[in-house]
Length: 210
Length: 210
DNA sequence: ACTCCAATGTCTACACCGTGGACATAATGA
DNA sequence: TCATTATGTCCACGGTGTAGACATTGGAGT
Image (cartoon, protein in one colour):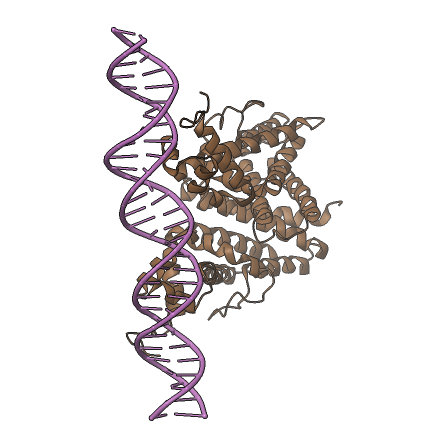
């Protein structure tokens, strides 16, 4: 497994790492196979020993990016003092948005792996952390809210959609979208307000008629 | 201005029309300049007499797509019986989402023109309709809410972000995102519920402390 | 220790893409 | 009528993703 001139030690990992660096500042489109292999000091065709095609490589990067997002969320959740459902939910939402703002390129590419996120248990073997996907962390927060009697169990599905939509939309619009020019401090302020509004909206649903 | 063999009558419009057809099923990425010119029966380089580069063409298509979105919203708004603020807001949100679901490709490309949407008055000379952008239609609904005393004037900015984020996120996730496989009827149902929740959240803000 | 084999990387080549520069043609207005 | 300007064509370049045939390597089995 030594890196001889010919056989690269672990090319697959190296390619993903390089692709990650390309995606970090500029998003998924910046992952161009020939450039990745060039930076890895290898022929373009070598990549095809480890990935079916470019899309496959992008998906691999997306999984890692998604894992980083999950790690960021877990980190912020762990930092909440009293882990009641409201605080957990607030932490999930705020860190989801913060990640999109701090790492717009990685967030962009992570979106490509959110398909799998729904079904699979863990997005990848994350060295540290619980290994839960962002989706599962959101669900866990809502379940806590249920356990606290602040949300009826039947409304969890609706609440997932409400929260995810609000948070994802805000992240998309402000990170790389039409609102990308807004000053960061205003965006942060709106982020906490928006998430708080979502928490309220979800919680209020418990006593609604329909 | 007749279409002789050499000089095309109105090539610019023809190119935009063809590009629109390419984008409709597959989004902005499907607008490939060579294919557009091929379908228009013209050399690739001919496009450069009317557009600075491919991106310029995409933006032109985006403007038209955005105009169609605005038209769809206006259409639904006009169909509301009693045009109070709540009904207007509900109509804006639902039609925004419906457009994304019915025309995912056009919605995708329209996103590229939402930058301009914020500042400019009209996205383009729409033959019919008021010529307001979707953003302005949203603002108008909120202003109506203000006029009705259901929203304080100072909260309009926040409300815009809350509504746009929620609706845009939902549209993104369900139209081409990780939730794209959800059955349409469930999505429609969630759409009306989600928008209703947003209307409530916005309105409730009037009596909030901060 | 030698041999074979599967894994891995290279070389060459193709069809596509966006785009630049020089040229050809058509419409226009003096 | 003729020159000017707008518009479209030709040829070319460097870039991309990807296919097929070949070269090199490390390791397994004898």
